Length: 244
Length: 243
Image (cartoon, each protein chain N blue to C red):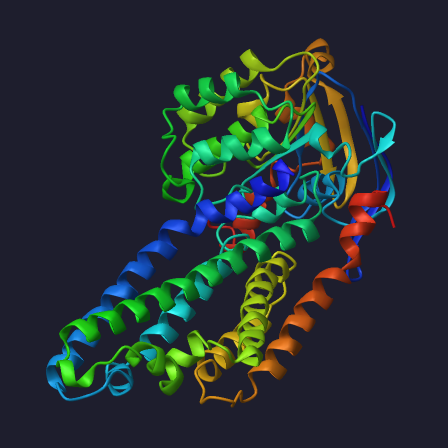
């Protein structure tokens, strides 16, 4: 389990995370939702140890260090692969550095998404790069897979394929933390939704709980954010002097 | 050990073909320019031919292109490869050392290729030049009399050998320093300073060394200081990121 206690992070004088506490048990698919600048990426980078912070983050009861960092993988829309290297080269490199790398899963996913093995990754299209980034994260052999807006730039069909494949291949020991703005798309795919706003967790709910209450995820998010449905019409009204 | 070789292999796979391509073009350019000079100045000796064929300029461009190619792998320009480096079980300082060793190998290969090309051109001269202009010592003497030839292969001038080693080690360290700093959002300027100084000071008269040793020593020192005093990494990855 990843346990986050009172996590705080500031950039200069601005607080990006204001005492976030969260637990991510094994085997869950968790959606992390929030506006731009809410703290989603910062939270993930703190978990990975890319940023210094105050608070406490443990992985299966231990601090996250070089010894256990291989248990966490990371797919980001910024991409973390080596552009000049081929997919085959990445596979060899990952196999050397991540002992639990799944060659079988890697080949199956490369085959499914029809990605070339011997071309430098920098020559891939944006969609293919995103696919490859996620493939590496899924095949590393990590127990916790963090994904930060991994599908930015992929078409809807491609994203649908990915959700289905993910559901099909994930094992019980694997946890996914998926940060995305595509709430409706992932609502059937995730088991739990965590809402972050202004550096604070403002909502944390299991989708089964929402189903029991007869609510959908979008409604829950709008309620949590106190979204005012008439906001746009009122703004237009003011802008156009009531002519709309 | 395999993990370290794997990191060095990563840099090798990213640059090898480019380095070879540049080398083939540079060697071809040197051969063509030397043969053209031989035809234009049939009565010139080797030293004058080497000078008039602008071999030193081709070598300088070749050298700069090597530096430019070696500096790119590991930079966070189009993707954040630093995220992957930070998740490896070896430290980023070890990654820096692996890249430095690979870069040193590449620069040594560059010098070896240049020496072989220059020697080959000298041998070509001894075959094509009129018999009265060639003796058994022609090539040997050329490597003493020509500033360029002597600078790349200083024969018994031990101090210049030390200079060459220092320049190559410094270039290797500085080309690895650039991506290390780039991944931290800083500009590793040492490679720029070092490349300019080595480019203009590498070829010198016998016994003269210019400012090369002083600057290369300083830039390499600055690069090593930056990398090995970077505490953030130890803080985060050896003890956890909490501060």
